[in-house]
Image 1 (cartoon, one colour):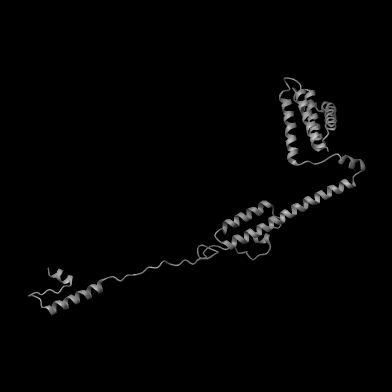
Image 2: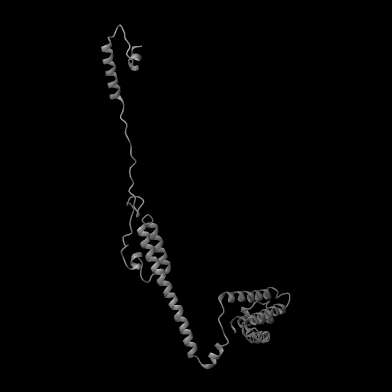
Length: 260
C-alpha cells in the first residue's frame, strides 16, 4: 500500500512517516524514474547518392574507350569486320556495360556510325552497278541496243508472282502426265501470258501475237533441245510433249514478264 501511495504522487499523512520525509522520498523516486527512462533515438534513413551513370553509386564497370573517335577501335573490331561481327561486338559490349548509361550511349553511337557507313557504301555500289550497266549498254553494238529497247525490268514481286504461276503450271503438267497430255495447262498458261501482256501494252492484238509467238518459239526450241538430252537424265514416264511444254512455259514467262 505504501508503494502505491508513493507512485501516485499524492501527499498522504501517515502516522509512521513524517510529511517532510515523504515528500523527499517522492522527489527521489521521480529522479530515479527519469534517470532509468531510455532516451528516444531518431533513426534517419541513409542517403543514397543518386548518379545518372550508375544506379549503384558508381560501383559498376565503365566502358574504357568512350573517348576513342574511331568507331572500329571503340567497338574493338577490325576495319574489315563483317556486319555480323559488328552486331556481335555491339551486343557483347552492351551486355557487359548494361548498368552504365554513358557506356551504352558510346557503344550505340559507334555502332550507328558503322551502320550508316555500311548503308552508304551499299548505296554507292548499287549506283555504280547501274552506271556500269548503262555504260555497257551504250557501248554495245546497235543490234544489241535495239534488243534492249524491247526489254524492261519489272518489280521483283511481279517477277516472283508470275514465276510461281508458270512453275505451278509445270508441276501440274508433270503430276498429270500419266493421265493425258498438258494441252489444258498450256492453254491456261497462254491465256495468262496474253492477259499480262495486255496489261502492259494496252493492246489485245499485240498481246495475242506476242503470246502466240512465245508459245511457238518455246515449242520449237523444246522440240530441238529435248532429244539432245541423254535419256539417263529424263524420267522414263515423261513424254516429249510434256518436256516440250515445260520449255514453252519458260518462254511464256519470259515474254509476259520482261518484254515491253
